[in-house]
Length: 157
Image (cartoon, rainbow, N blue to C red):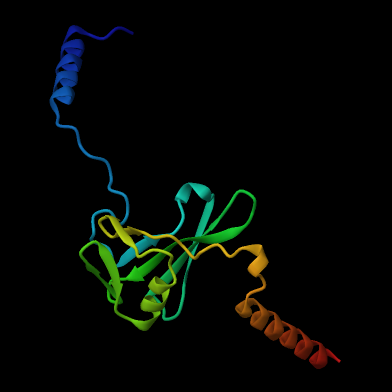
């Protein structure tokens, strides 16, 4: 079925109108505008992970950890979400106001640096060489885990 002359003329007008329209920007990525409730501190690049989950650490809604699952199945921290009520921006740096946030920020290798909006970037913990392992913290955790397992076994008998 062929289009009539009037249909072809209208189609040409519509095409001209569409070309004359100003280009609209797409949707802004979360956190880049600076209007949210959280600051995001990325520790590792997103492209290292295939699946993400977040969960509260400490009090509900204040500090959240975003965990990512790699292709090989291992999980690691990709980023942290810090409530704006628990921290503030001083220049280009993020400064903690609550004890939990101060402890978290002091654990990074570098201070979080502002990227855009509410998004910051920091390096995670330092890599501990194998010759320094097990660390005292690892030894303490192993002992407590052994005690827990022994207590469970005693209860079963």
